[in-house]
Length: 133
Image 1 (tube, rainbow, N blue to C red):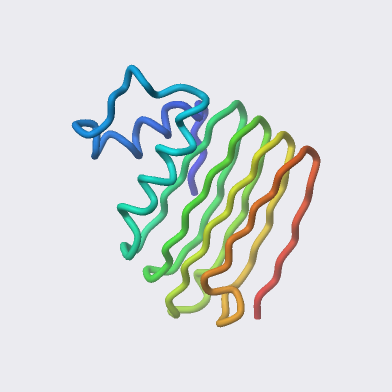
Image 2 (cartoon, rainbow, N blue to C red):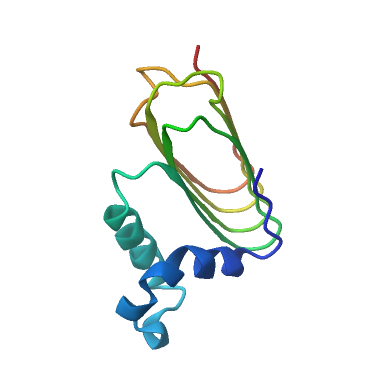
C-alpha cells in the first residue's frame, strides 16, 4: 500500500536516480509531464511500480504480483487509485493517468485483454470501476 502525504515528495523519490541528467532549474509545472514521460521510457521493460503524485491528498493502494509493471500518474487533488492483481502470476503492464480533482479509479484483476492497457482520465469527479476475470 502506498499513501504519501505530499505528492511533490514522490516526484523527487522517483527522479532522484537520474538527478545528474536533470537541470532542476528548468523543472516547473510545464516541464514536469515531459520529465515523467522520459522517466517511464527509460525504465520500460523493468518490473515494478512507478508512481507520480502531484497535488494534495492523492492516494494509491496497490496489491501487485511480482510480474506487474505499472506506471501511475495522479495530477491534481483528492485522486484515488485502487489496483489489485495479486491473484495471478501472469505478466501485466498497465499505465494509469488521472488529471483533475476527486477522481476514483478501481481496477481488480488482470488478463490478456487488460495487459498493455493505458487509462487516461481527464476532468473532475470521474469514477471508473474495472473488473478483469
